[in-house]
Length: 89
Image (cartoon, rainbow, N blue to C red; front, side):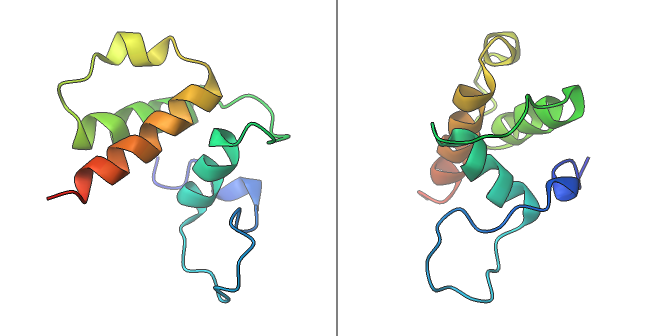
């Protein structure tokens, strides 16, 4: 599942001068999905599972079934929140 988002071939969502961008395919995709302006199709089951695993990795207290009920945008925002949580300490 490490490459769940690689096939999307997206460019950096930040559109800033960080060339070459060192964000992973997953991070770029998650930032696109978290944006209300994304034009991506629905996440696949594999992509959603990856998101859930990523959230639980950094925030194990979160309820997986409640997270699974979220739409793709909200799920992506939770992934970003979990990443921010992981670097707070």
